Image (cartoon, rainbow, N blue to C red):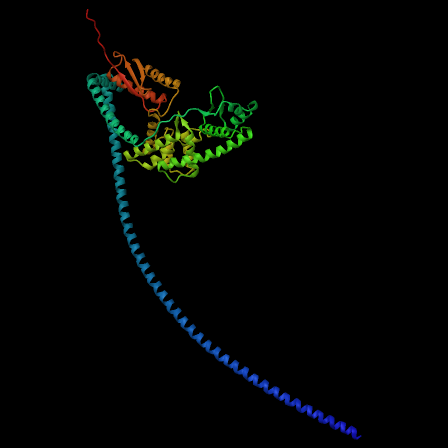
Length: 520
């Protein structure tokens, strides 16, 4: 029993001790928590105070900005009002000016209406007077016809015949004097201009043939060029488009063809093959293709060089290549590229002398025959082909017109077009520039003589100076002095209409009366 009591007392004492220890720890924790809470509250209050301070600063700045914005808005409004007032003043001034102009226009319209009425009235009066004059004229004609018993045409013919009979020597003399004066002045001025233009140009006259000679190191190489059963020569002709003539000419073969580009490619290719020594179809094809590329580059260089010598810039690269092709094109034996450059220089010189556009004349003269580079590929005349090419590459309308009109397929509309035609004729007709076959030359002379002999009163006719002059002897008893002048004009007109000729043809009609007697 005592033991139990002791145990119970011990348990009670332990429980009390434990409860006291728990209360002491709990008290410490509470104090610590209160202290931390107080610190947090103090920090929060401090931050709140800082935040309130920042808010106050922000409100102050915001108020300042709002105030600035209001001030600026007021300034803008003031400026807008000023501009509005200024615009209103300007509009009012413009309105006043328009009103003044409108009043002036009303007055002018009124004046024009009055003038129109006066003009119409005057026109009616003139028409009435014309009718009266016409009526009087017809009455006079009728009376004159009744008196003379002649019609109007008969009276006119009689009057002209009487004037011609009575004043023929004076008329012939006066006409000749006028014609001679005009011709002398025109010829003198034209010769001066042309002479100055040609003197500024130093150009050689070259003539291209239709065959090219290729020299060989020995005659043994001819057999290798021909190949077994003609395989090599057939392949070469097929690839180059020319004819290769292998004959008995020692140390040479002939390449024949009208296309200078093809002949040049063939010549260069054959020279390479001979130097290489390997002549067989595959090698021929390789060499020909390589040479074509080289010649294409060469044509570009020719075009660039020509444009540089002409002082012309800004042309399209493809147009430059087409210009270079003209180096391998001939017209009556005259190299077309050299001819084109010559025409450009002559046209520029003439344009400078007569006050035309020098650049347009030079450029049109330089490009006038560019169609000849492709005229074997495109149908039509080279002048119109040239026009289409220049349109494609964006040349000016003035240049295009001068080019398309240089053979009169299109009517002349500018002085530059006439200058280009004249420069073309000068370049083509100067001695040595072009060559003709003997048959064509003789036919042209024969046509001139036959045309002149077809006129009544012509006794003899001679075409001289390579067909540039025709001397015509007439029968003096059938053709008088006035008739000789008229005959020369009629023959010139017929030559221009029916014949084709380079340059000009001078027609000289000679009428002479020979009195012959014999002393016995």
